[in-house]
Image (cartoon, rainbow, N blue to C red):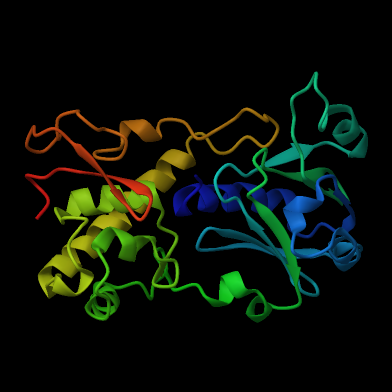
Length: 279
């Protein structure tokens, strides 16, 4: 599932491709990708509008237009694809022989930007303003923003009685972290994912903040080398498994103490951690 580093890498790669381009029209090939909005609404909304900026908020990609904006949320398996023109889109998209899935395509002045999610969890929505989007307006502080300080994190922790792992996954508290980097941050900070957030001391909050920032920075560096290849429908981020210390390493030795990494379930999600190191 794309988390903050993956989405940030997508945004940085996408920005020079589409910034300043005008949207000629939208091809909505699977209406489920824009629900609960209608395909007619989204198509009419974007036609003729210019993409001024490409931004990220939490796990959202924002295409800020000359009027309004589009939000792209990848959920579990969403991705972006790039086609040279509408003819190439027609030749490759949603055909059995090409196996290139596309849900929504924005035909631009130069090129076509496709949004794809074979499992149909991802969404593309149009809004008059960011405040109109329930998803954006509910986001907490972004984990890569200047406002995300150890003091601010400590304040948020002190107000929550949820387990630490659940706290980090709550996008209304800290935006951008998902299952992978929550596990990794807690491992680096040596904190038990089952501990109640309000029991974390100021010193531990400082340690957790440092772990979150460094884990995300390292993952982003990995996601940008190589950068996303929107031309390749089978492309995905390479090398991330090399930097993981806890996630998906059940039964393998902890790289700090040698104890086997454990997997537990929290709120329906797998949590990986070291029972000896993380207190």
